[in-house]
Length: 228
Length: 228
DNA sequence: ACTTGTTTGTGAATGCTTTCACAAGGAACC
DNA sequence: GGTTCCTTGTGAAAGCATTCACAAACAAGT
Image (cartoon, rainbow over all chains, first blue to last red; front, side, top):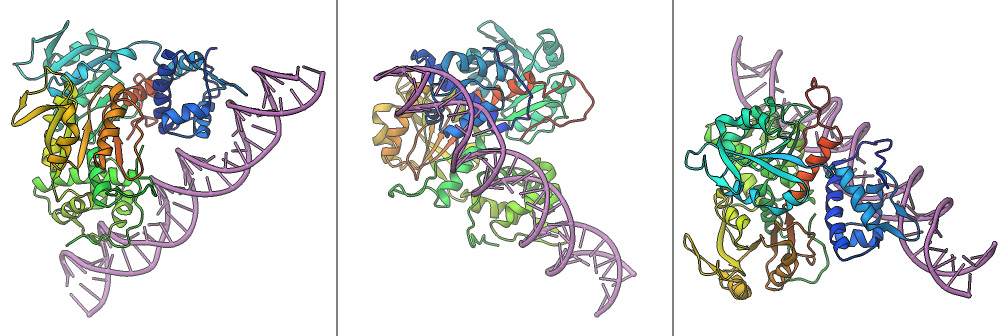
């Protein structure tokens, strides 16, 4: 059953994030050989509600069978199509420091079709290193490298102070998707998709929860305070 | 000016996340020697609106001077107090793989008062390694280590398949704050604060934006599509 | 073929968050 | 001290996202 991207209502960001979670859950179901799954069960395993699951999916078409639930393989395919994961994406990593190295080895990216085709850095000690097959190149070759390798998405893993300039260059070179790990608020022009992974913000959110007494010492389960 | 945590309205999560961004912006302003800042300017540098800034702050007290703006040093102190960053937090890192190593070296954590006091792993090749001062310990010593070092917050950087079990143990040991990097939806009891950093979800969000044509190839700036 | 069980898809209702708009407070200069 | 110019703090309005609730659809068993 192919996905009908049908009337294409505008879809909210939280919805897309949840679809991604559903897909991860469903891939596991698939490996377990489960044929079908109900919105209720999918919700339970994804940390949301059945109604939410159904609403989320309903924005893209109708995938379930009443009285039965969803076909796991079909829903996996549908979600992969919706999320644009049926093709492979050509990715460049900018910044070959600790975080860059960790991301380079991150299997989940590769598994979902994100292939890191190029790595750039400004440190002469790093330039020329060979990371199983991919050579770390000088950031001076950035524009040339992006074009040469037809890069779709760039991962920014440089220090905060260098991030905006890198992004400006990358955008000028025509890249339309950026995943930013530097803890700064970046500016990109309209038409460029930008996502931030800001660990500092997250851990400070924990600090807030603990400090403001939202998380109790060891009390009976009365009030929930476990987020996302 | 001390922070009056006043009537303590319940504060939304997005608000707390933005406070954390404001603080980062203000720290820079402080280094630049700026004395005051308007909600307008703070908003511009934080990627939000002036009204949002004022609403966010108003939940915690009144910090500004009409006609003048906010005192940068005072607001920095206020935010640090609100976010619970005036103390140091004792953190343990579980998982000494690539991601664990990257996080261990992440300066932003240390700078804001998050001190990694212990590292655990299950790999015999890693156990016993000394990471400038901190010895990597066996996960079998997890409970003992957490107690011994009075750990407040745990960072989970283990494979997805091991994450839930680790979290269960950590919670049983009394830890109330968890920062999870494993791409799974974890279950924690009420009273435990949990934050997820899910890079796979973020990059799939980019894939969606690019695939669904939300990000255009090279078109005049008509519609915004740069998120967060 | 009918009946019983289940589970979806979806308008309507609720609950949150953000944006608007403006009165009130204060600075600065004459 | 009065006047002008800014900028905050905040109710009210608008905009989004989640939850509710139920009719419609199908499976399965008799």
